[in-house]
Image 1 (cartoon, rainbow, N blue to C red):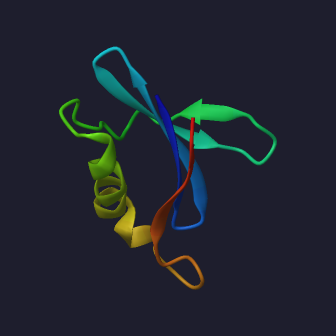
Image 2 (cartoon, rainbow, N blue to C red):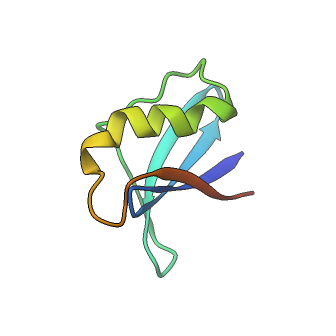
Length: 74
């Protein structure tokens, strides 16, 4: 399962791999890099990820980028 989000203007994806969630920064050209310093609790359900990302990255809110929203799912 892959869920994609706009996190205060930054494109990110969350991948379910086995029993873990992995967070990635997405580029506009299709490259992605893993974010290791944010650990998403394995017990979070997919519908709880948006709120979790908002809590973790809320200090990034500025200007036109004041929210976190899901942009697509695979």
